[in-house]
Amino acid sequence: MRNDFARWSEYFIRESFMRWLVTGGVGFIGTNLVTHLVETGNDVVIIDDMSRIGVDLNAKFLKEKFGIKPNKIDVSRNDELLPFLRTQSKFDVVAHLAGQVSLLESIKDPMRDFAVNAQGTLNILNYIRTASSETILLGMSSNKLYGDLNKIKFSETDTRYVATDWPNGFNESLPLDFHAPYGCSKGIADQYLADFSRTYGLRTASLRQSSVYGPHQHPRSDQGWVTHLVTEAIYGQEIQLNGIGKQVRDLLHAVDLAKLFVLLAKNVSLFSTHQFNIGGGQSNSLSILELFSRLEQTLGIKVVFKTGPERPSDQKVFISDNSAVTALTGWQPEINLDFGLSQLIESVRSKKDTG
Image (tube, rainbow, N blue to C red):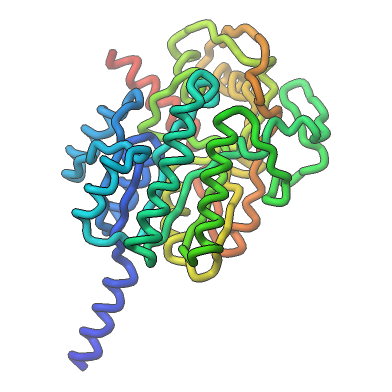
């Protein structure tokens, strides 16, 4: 009986506990993933180049809450990355979140965009190939791999664009069409993940995510659009839009995304060389104008904005069809738009009130 119990206990611990490396671990998504992993009993190591706005606050949060400190490493530089990895015991999973995430920044500095997104991913993959082939690699990709979708048929309502032939959102059959340096670098990384699985047998998956929001996001005008616009509206700023405000995205809460990472790691035997479209889905979709209407009704304010030219390679609509990943893992977003937005609004108002 005692031996049976010991074997059961060992099996339970082995199945529930994993050692994770999270690259970009003090970014917005990384901080939410690390929080979820630690709270569910996993061992987590963080690397991050500490270059993005707000990461110092996220690093402080993780240190104070969990005692975890990030290792300052640039994944695009093997002279920093490899010596560190060689000091570590092997990881069960690498969540590769480190990346240059701004389309506009990619246009300003395409060399840096390529170095971080493409070369950085290759550096991680090649280390796993040569030194840790059992490690699972889950990479963050982007809906920008599908280009500007200008060949898609769109209709228009008073508040949003509608992709009329894709009522359930876009699935992975949508043709790839890399636009702008950002789309190219993320596309290269996405294909490296697939090809290292096919060629070397590595266990990889790529998450082509739409718009993610939630705690620990420090907004800028060219990324984190929901948090940015909510913040500008609550602070009474006049908002400059790219386009007329009818662009639509499906919103995925970062906590739901963190749970998906764990499910993918635990179900890696069910798939190989998979790229998944990931988002909040049709029921959690929102246009900019619809967001403003919600804010006005909720807060009793008037959102002041100006329209302007669209961004290069911008998409009128991107809503993810999550059917493929749901079929394999059972995952579905749990945090709906009403709850997630109310949480975000309260967070921004609290910061404003406390100065």
